[in-house]
Image 1 (cartoon, rainbow, N blue to C red):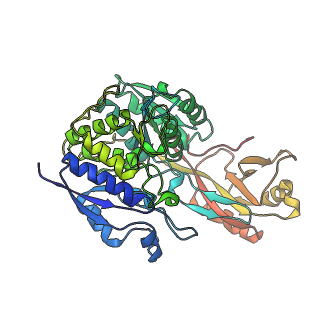
Image 2 (cartoon, helix red, strand yellow; image 1 turned 90 degrees about the vertical axis):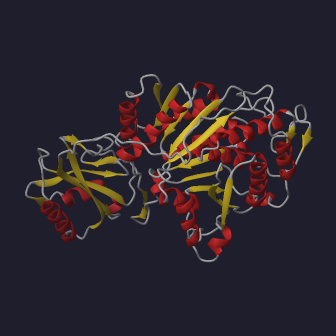
Image 3 (tube, rainbow, N blue to C red; image 1 turned 120 degrees about the horizontal axis):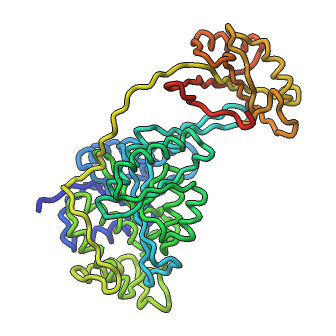
Length: 484
């Protein structure tokens, strides 16, 4: 077997220790790897590179297309970008895959039957990182959900379930509140699920879904969800299986894939040789499957489980009644190496899907006809805190604004209708939304929108943002106000 070149980053904190342990195991198992080591993390940040990654490192990633990464430390203070988010978005790593499995009784858990995989959309949602301070009191963070982004991750989830003989895919959203953004994700899930009739598909609202993950995790198989929700529930799921320290993760795109532990750099225990390398090792096992070395991945995974069975445990999972010896990072790696070629006795031996070398997360999106898009109104946001923030005062002031029949219909504050016929008990910030429609909601022009803004300027109102209101094939592309 020819060697596969991979990019390796030792990271910060406990990163160098767990990477050494992981690579020692991979080498001993016969993994055919050529390693290109790059520098990332704290020292790069402190050189003034805000992304935390050297420019040369991108060339390595473009060449190898495989990244084995230890956790890093981001310096305190502003101006430093998340390296994980930067890497995922720059390289198009749209699918975050986190297996969460119990290894009871060798790793303590209340849920010994847990065996789920969380597949998280990795590029969109609030992690787009588009934020604004619009008034003295109000900040905004944009939640961006696209149809292609939703379809890619949902198709990936069903293909993953199909490849690994998983029986069910559960979608989690909050579309009872965010009916358009989360509603799109749920709608696409329903559409894609029809193409996989042999796989059960269901949906949970994210709040009860998270509660069920924490209370009845055995009911789940594959979960697919949006970026923020996936970030939260994957840590919940990892913790209930026994330890976040055991969790490995893959971040897969059409061309490049990144493999890592899900935990952080733990600088407080750096250099003490007590960190558990299992999270990074499990990420590396996923990497071996990805690059077409599943037999080596099985060999390592089985030796790792046999090590757990034999009671060689790092401090984070040590149990007086189960463990036979508390070991450090390197001694744990040595124990795994000694068991290469052995299989666990009580746990199910690992068997990984065979796939072509360098298999990617490429999926084929469905073709869609363009929709008829029409502008029918505009929301104008203003910064206003005069007259005791009385909605009736600003409402009466805006009644004079008229652009060829395009008039104010209502005012909201933080999404709640406050004019006309608002409730006096509603608290109002300095951030107001003014909605303009034709009475019959017919098509309007951009010139009318500009006229509205000119008239508001004449009234000495500070507009801070506008959102055009569109229909798509006659269907509203915007939400109604609370109380409307």
